[in-house]
Each structure stands twice: as structure tokens, then as C-alpha cells.
Image (cartoon, rainbow, N blue to C red):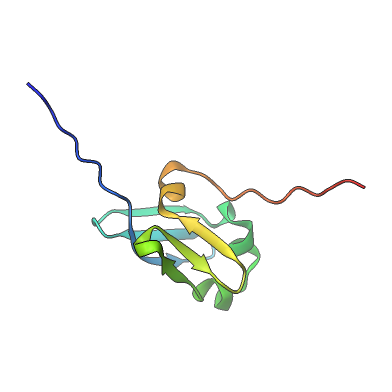
Length: 90
């Protein structure tokens, strides 16, 4: 017997952001949340800046133009937080 598994692409339909979490509502009905701290840029942004986002790439991710932050649906699913830039030593 053969079992075929159809992998479905992860696509974001909408998001919501609280003081603690980023929640993505996926087109297939799933809801995923990650800690806001996973994005240092969003953690340091104002609520107004957090609310100014656009869903990009047909739902592949979200972009916040005012703070130049991008989060992908796959990054949220697989648990890949945004790294802080390293400070260069002089």
C-alpha cells in the first residue's frame, strides 16, 4: 500500500500582534503564535509601527516597512527567531 502525502504551502491570511505575541492566521485554518521577543525590531517598535504591516509574497510572509522587518510563515512554523546584528569590534 502506498501513502501519498501532499505538502501544503504555508500561507498567512492575517496577523495580530499583542505586547507578547505575533499570531498568524493561515489560509488553511491553522493559527500559529510566536513570542514577540523573536523579533527584536518588533519588540522595540511602537504599537503604531507594529500595526503598519503588509502581507507579502502571496502570504509567504509579513513586512513592516517603517522598521524594515520581515517574518516568514515558515520561520514562524519552524521556530526561527530573528537574530540581532552583531556589533563589530574596532
